[in-house]
Length: 140
Image (cartoon, rainbow, N blue to C red; front, side, top):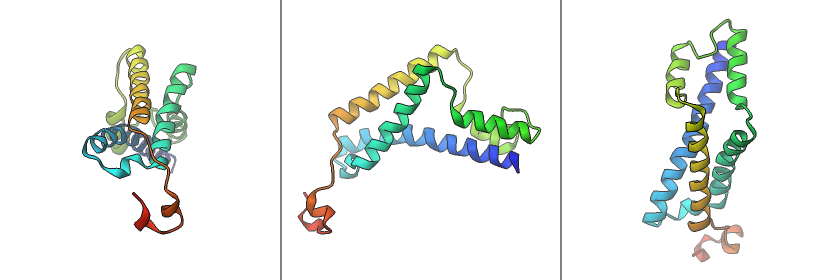
């Protein structure tokens, strides 16, 4: 059971990274193509918060809680903490790389800056009053 929980946590970790990376790509593409949904305030706020938390962790030198929990459950399962199940190895290979720490610091800070810039230049929009009241025909 603990090995399953560890794999589940690394799966959530991969989904988190994918949300940030793919989300930014979709925002950039949607901005260029005029997709209205990429300006959805809730999507944009959660996207900014997701990378903002990663940047905060990096600046404050905090280990990611998902990594800590995964390692904890792997240790309880008697597994090495690097994801030794098939699923664990596969998912780890998607988001974990062997590089000097400065590479990750620069990457996280650069990515966070890019997300913040898209937030400023491709501004999210609050729902209009007509949309909130249930009359989407008046939305523009």
